[in-house]
Length: 110
Length: 340
Image 1 (cartoon, rainbow over the protein chains, first blue to last red):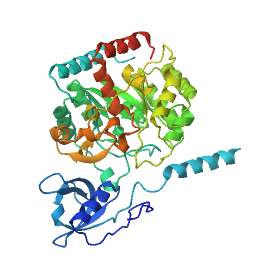
Image 2 (image 1 turned 120 degrees about the vertical axis):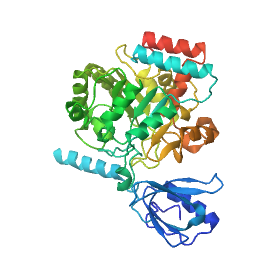
Image 3 (image 1 turned 135 degrees about the horizontal axis):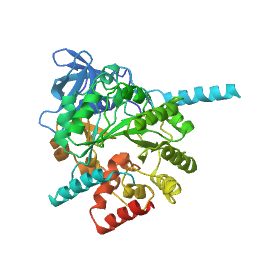
């Protein structure tokens, strides 16, 4: 990912080795949208990755899947790919848009 | 200062008890977020940017109570999200009051009048509505990115006061704030009849829509000094006087992020209410496994550099009050004279 990239939405880093996986999981943890995890058995898990822990014997991520009510834990060792498939809810500039609307309204009233 | 004596006594005896037990780290206020949904999208807020299926989730009342009991703090603040959108807010507050927890329900007050008319709450010395008010009408509506919200909040405050509830305000200050306009705001809130006001500089959330107006430390000191160096006797602040003095640059405190731990649908947020560096499954794990030395102003952590927010430093200020005669006498002097 380049520094210029404003949002990770749509990003697919491809196949991941162990070091790269940890790095991409950090991005996924910071990402305010759903991701899709591809597991070692081919299963795809789509949901919000809200936690990860590398400081344990078996590092894991925690995900709220879109279609499940509870959270699930998935070991790093089972993850083959991470795709940033959901909308980035922190992207965009709603404050600037609101200010522009407000200023336009004020201008039209004068 | 405007904190009732019974609450002051509860907090003082709790803090002294922790000190007598030799506890270096203890919680003072639990920040309990039962949901992230909100009916506003404020410019400086980084709390609500989640996918829809996350925003639909709620903690159960049982999960909330278990967290409160595990944490043991004498005060519980319920922010969010907007807690009045939480379907079980009445039952949650009733359960907390029954446990003699001092509850600050932090609300934008859009739904306050309606919920009060529905009879969701009963007045209690343990319950305060802490209404989000970022200044006078123009400033507040700008901060919450919607016109008319200031007037709705005032209406909610009037309704709550008329029904005998404790009401305080909480104001987050950003760069560009006009200290003189804030002083007029203090007068207006006192005229309304609120019990007290809470102030804090905003935190520079990386996910907030407006990234340009977060206060830096020196600017925070300047603004709070201009605003509070000659306070009117009638202004009541529902917070530690030492914290306000810290914002004015009179104290050099260090952050105590464990003082106001946060619990939400993801677990115990590490290390604090503002920074999201991970989640612990239990309060015990949060306290024991978090690398606290990596956080705070002196740690060199870039994310903590400019932070002077209440959830990191108000607990420090309260601790400092009971840590030395200097702290105790400064707090007593400010409380008795109203001077900061």
